[in-house]
Image: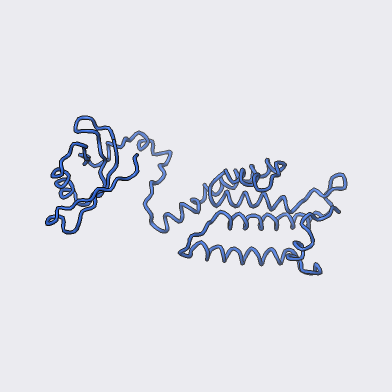
Length: 240
């Protein structure tokens, strides 16, 4: 049997000082605990990530699969070298689970960069593609789900069967006429425009009244006592 590259301290953290604790008990306890704590951390009103928790969970599931396969097939070997490596299953499981949750294929590249094991290129790519395809068919990604749960504004996907929507242009459903500000507008014209369209706080700025080339983007903030003070503050935003 080949020497374990993890080292004795790492093995003892999972199987105990004397190796009397089953690796399966440790993995099951780790998966359940880490899954619950990941949910708590992701739902707290603090900045936290989703990528690494699902990556670690996928690695734990993959390790469990590898350990089970080695337990059921202890004599599988080639040239006296054991060919079932639970660590390889952990890497593949981490990439597949993370790709399924996030609906991304770039996870495979991240796995290669983290491990430096190009020998796992084909297994990781196949696992990530299959997991991504199955998950995309069943449900949206974790990020899309969070957007829908929090009811954040977003542009929904257009179904491939709805071909009529792919040919629509912006002018067909936009509100017209478009309110704009020209560089040659007077103070009175700007005041009249803002009072007339009070619900709009941002206007595109064009070169002049004849050339509608976008020059800048301005935000206008009206003082509460605008009618008496006639105070208007201009805030220039980032150039488009």
